Length: 63
Image (cartoon, rainbow, N blue to C red; front, side, top):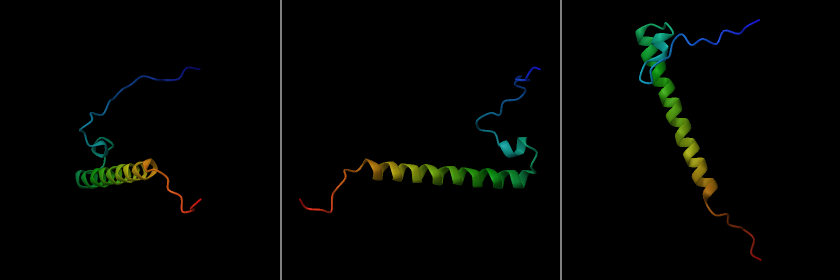
């Protein structure tokens, strides 16, 4: 048994993937905007988390 690994189509980076998947234009534009917003939110949260983790640790206990 062989596995088919042939690449038949490559989506360009600036293309709307939802259009290529067959969604109608209005839905594709909306879905792409929602996806991009989710990506932006996740990136901002990751950056915030990394900044918090990189801060020096301070102890509340005085020794």
